[in-house]
Image (cartoon, rainbow, N blue to C red; front, side, top):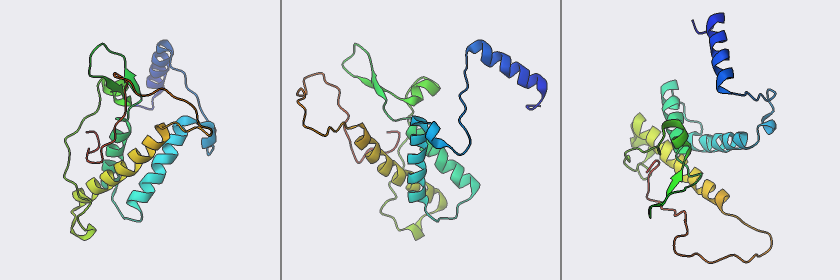
Length: 172
């Protein structure tokens, strides 16, 4: 059993030898969480906007949240230092599976009326809609803005830039 004392003791010993340190925050106090809680708040906001008042089952919600999780874990964090001419971005997916998360693109259901969608198509439409909103907000957060104009260097050959393409699907 997972709740037995022997299993708990074995897990505790493993975590201790691996150097895992737990940081707990008080219940109902997300302001103690900092950056990760801000990310959760942002995602909750977008999930509410996309799903709205739709009555969906547990399996449908689980599918939507899993796809959203994959989208979040495919976001670029920084450039991977390499000698090649094709720079790559480090993503949370690299920490999870050792490489970026990729998926085959689905059909675009944004122009199909809601009443004509099957449940799977509805879930895909929700995920695509959330991806568009979240990626737009995420890119705005990455852009540095200063109160006063500051001089900056021009883009040179070899400078890494993040390009936005509205036609690229999630995990594309």
